[in-house]
Image 1 (tube, rainbow, N blue to C red):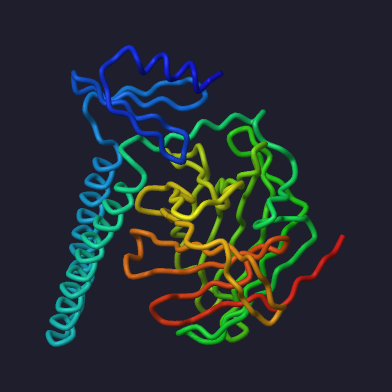
Image 2 (image 1 turned 180 degrees about the vertical axis):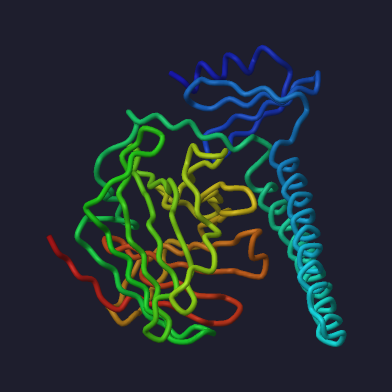
Length: 331
């Protein structure tokens, strides 16, 4: 019935229309007004604005301004070095860091623009209705049973990495939705280097949403950054889908949205992978490719086994891989 209602609305204007996998109808009228309908019946009207492309431009500008600000701040530190040679070396390093940061900003812009070509022009503004969510997460490719811990291991550039992904009995209410809390701990050569709380919830259709994370990286026991921390509904941040209910090859979607802080995209590449990891061998695995404008050179493939969940993460550029070693199940 909702689809028929949308069709009737669309017929009132001369248009070309396209429905994407996120449930939007984009209608371009003769007056140049872009009408965006979703299946809940709500309408977003933008006067000829490509929200995705505009966001890309604004994010690039913010990134460049932040790089310049960091550069000026670094020069201020260099000024307080008494030794001329050390001061010059500091200034040279600041300049090199500025150039690197500017290149990342530009490369990130390219990633966002490429993503916009797949996402379409609509603003990213998912409707979160708490009544549309359930209390358990049983998506076959991303099941989160409280008391379960997934343990991964692999050789990374920084050393051997062990990742403990523990589904806790704790919950967190975000945007009115009760989310399952996961404690994700990363150890490099036996030393804790990243400590994160993640929050997930499943809607009635079976899609698993990622509502945020509280993360920090550590070095010598001290927190070095909390970059990536976000929560849906706070400071304009929004949840994304971490796993679709019914994946199809070519599906492309946001997994999170915290501009210039947490922006992961995923694309479904295969539904028939055979994957062997220390935990076992699996058929009919789902493969996704993940990218982010925050690390433009990063391209990760992730493999999910039905009834198990994520079993392997592969860095396509370095070849580094993290594989499921075992699963423990507690109370």
